[in-house]
Length: 143
Image (tube, rainbow, N blue to C red):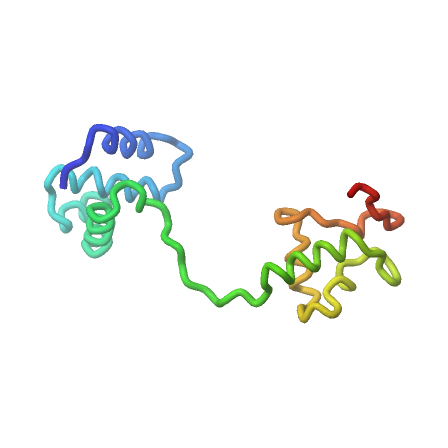
């Protein structure tokens, strides 16, 4: 396996950087050691890994080069809430007054989703909806 000068510089930089996640740094060390011509078994013994893992990262690097060092997408359960349902909940939260009190639970009514899903939609990282934090519920007049 051969590395270009840019690839080698990037890999060595990630290994030296203190903020690089350790899993990423190990992958970089594996690729750098494999580029010296060492076998999977020797690289694994040197870095405290397994020959299977070294072979896997060597093959991935040969096929996809430096872009493959990050984590690959993983499988998971299918989404249960569609983008249209998310949009409807956000719109309903921002544009209507709740019946009793400022709450997000009311916004899931009629959408076919539960209160937990509505809470996830309103999570601060996603949309930052927090109507429960105001004393009175105010609708925006901004178009």
